[in-house]
Amino acid sequence: MPDFVRTGQQFLENLFAGEFAKAVEFFDPTLRAAVTDQQLHQLWTQITTSFGKPLKHAGTRTAKTLSSSAEIVYLSWDFEKERIDTRMVVNNANKLIGLSFETPVIK
Image (cartoon, rainbow, N blue to C red; front, side, top):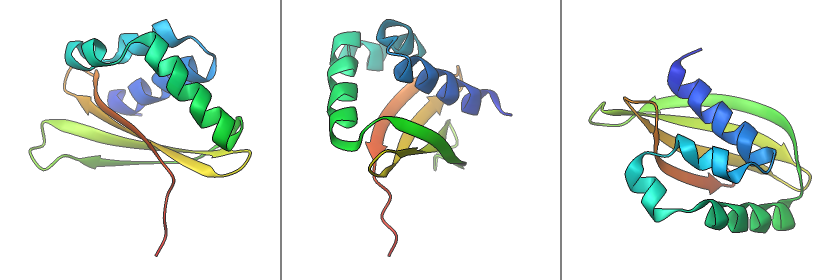
């Protein structure tokens, strides 16, 4: 398993465990300055209030950024009410430089 995928998995493990201070340690300094562990906790509370608890890992996919200076990891999880994709952009130092939670839409 590539290191950047492992970074994404470890971030989510901390998030799911409610260890927000440990989760933000995976952020690069710029993202860390923009998102505190308290803000991450608030976001996680909103997600679990809307979608329920995470139940099982549903898939992993990766992509390269156009500049190839970072990798994109999508970790899909089935929650009680809906599937959520966590999209993480991981730099060459294996730190998150981008993060979003998305509901996949199939057209």
